[in-house]
Length: 304
Image (cartoon, rainbow, N blue to C red; front, side, top):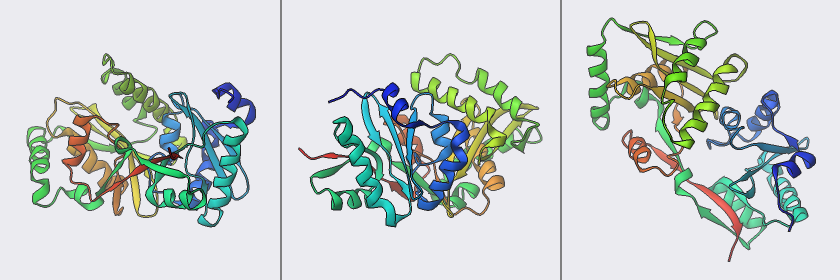
């Protein structure tokens, strides 16, 4: 079995680069997955930590990568009628290298498609990677009994900072202010994952005007204290890719989410707020907003 490295993949396949986003987005439009990893902003954000390589035909695009030393493939980007052909090509690639065919971030319906082709394979649920999906109108209004605690935080913010805060859509005029804010936001935190996320967020801010995303910021007394960025996953669902705010300002996180969704995604039915990465505090926070659905994600591999 040949040990797969990024050098080998770079020789045999095309490394995904920021400039490739229009091409990748065109393939994403064919499948319209509502899973957060199959999102161009997410891919670009994490390219430094998780480089991807692609194999392309007229009918499908395969995304390959290495995570913690394991060679994997995402769901093929194609119309459903070409899914089986794309999966079979993916298996041929893995067979060529003598590696176990490993598929990552597959939704349940796509797991069933693969297992129909290869009954010896199984889907293993990876709960830490599950996506939390919310009712868009609920996050834009905080209406209803379930959202009472969040509404209390939001109203406390409005009361304390009345006349002192403002919302702005992200643009060329204010993006540098967000970059300046991010330079100090948790800059001393020793969490490697958080620092990798900061690096990716800088990349998205640097490229903001070139990418298919929208966002907004909150100023308090003229200074940026929070910002958020989202993008479209499907006709009915957007994804909140980035959300940063001062932890010590009560209600600020509730405010930036409400205002960003209200201004930038006013008619969107559903909001995907991504996974909890297996962190209990993040899981509790995401559950506290009462998701209407949790998109289960699976790793597919050969059964024992």
